[in-house]
Amino acid sequence: MTRVVLSFLFFNGPAVADPQDLGALVAGLQRRYASVGSISARFTQIYRAPGIEQIESGILFMKKPGLMRWEYRDPETKLFVADGRNAYLYTPGDRQVIIRPFSANELRSTPLRFLLGQGDIEKDFKVARETEFTPRVEATFRESTGNLSEFLLTNLETNIKIGDSQFQFKIPKGVEVIRLADQE
Image (tube, rainbow, N blue to C red; front, side, top):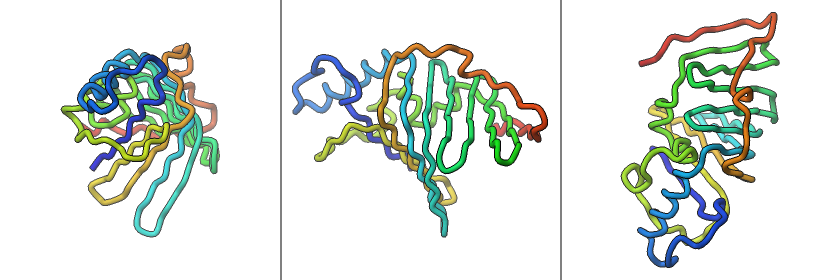
């Protein structure tokens, strides 16, 4: 199950339609997301599994097509970088880097692709009007095991200038490197 709340308030600009016309609002939101080439935001990630609740936060940067940088800052420093070919998860405290193949196609089954203007809101999700509206982007992913990951994005900025070097990862000297095979 994936639940997504996409906020109209993140995107400054003229009103897209009569607020009562949900179809026109969704079409306007789809056009707005399609125009996005890059984003930055603060994130909070909540992971829940039986007997576990883990909350992490930091800053994320995304850029078309499928480039990502998640800088985890609290409670532990970690870095996740996707460069279009591979994904790197670096945990300085463990002196470890996990590398696995990763492409923009992997975003196809996640709400994150909408932040980069991919996908179709009406075809891929059930659209409904929220009665209480707050300026946020929120995504919830439920794994087949029942574990749940929730992401809340705030301070979202779109179409900012982000150099490609932000999405390149250099393996630090002296760390353990674990290479995972492609899971397809």
